[in-house]
Length: 461
Picture 1 (cartoon, rainbow, N blue to C red):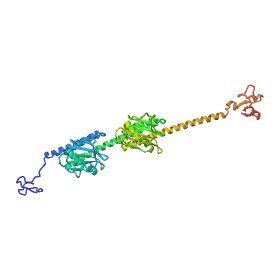
Picture 2: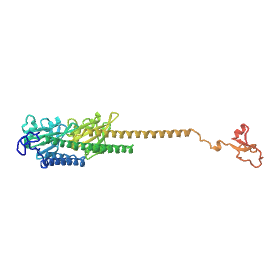
Picture 3: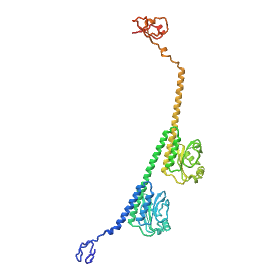
Picture 4: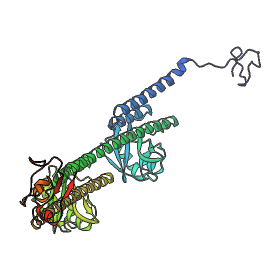
């Protein structure tokens, strides 16, 4: 530390000058020295706050968030070019880009260790290369691409979700100037924000899809309850929900009828014949036929080019202009009784979630078929029992004589003693003492002339 009086250099731990004894003062830092760093930190915080604001206002729209992330990353890491790639099977698909390097959204890069982005994803860690153009042995594919685009210094940070890479954020410079440790740490923060945005959109979308699926299932069950004897409204509801929730242009349901598949329901613009009238042969040369015959799900990315495997189905696909097809059998007691099928006009494979969802719709269609069958059988049995009961009742009525009226079959009347002494054997209708009867005479119960002749009458007080 230099003495301000005699300019003598002193050790840094000395408080006084060893030459003249002057008190030594440590150099102070002014606000002007901190202002650039403070301004940069404030700008970084503002950029991150803006990203979080976009995330909150666009829970299902991921693109604006990723666009803002690459823009901020390029600015604060002093890189003229920034990109975000997401893992898509064995490729990295471009999702967002900022800079002069020509790159379109959806651009695919093979996932390999020969590229900086690929190695970052495979190893799950940041990779920084000062001059990618000269790294021909370590990064052969990446070095060739860098020479084409004129880029040199490259930095890649993986997008990690619970420790698993789901993508990468990539910075590129035209000069061989390596990225600093501060810039690498800052890019990791932007990578974390990109993961937050991706996860937020995924969870929101999953919740929305689950709610839509539950609503669709509830609607179908409601239609089943309202149509216990008619399966057509249920088929129509199932086809509409399957096409909408599985993102297919077309959905159709077929029922097995001997060696034919009857066209039972349809939703979508792709023509295929009239519902209830059109049928197709139950053969293995069609996707639907093989699905029913083998009782398993069939999924073909492009049916038009599968002429060797499905000759008839491929011809129909070329005729009606559809390509990707998914067919799920309607299974009852391990026997296929039909199928439900989705079609797309572009080559776009269905996801595992969509396949599982279509299997759920197939189960609901089987429930509807079984419900109608059982309800119809119950109605027929009730009708048969009603007819049998009516026939038995009619037969019994013919065998049993008509019952006499109460007055003619059981005639218990009270007569006085005098009336009973008459020689007339017709029933007497005397219910009270007649004129001439003694007041003290007793009333006698009489049933019929035969009962009078067989024994003495019964008297009653």
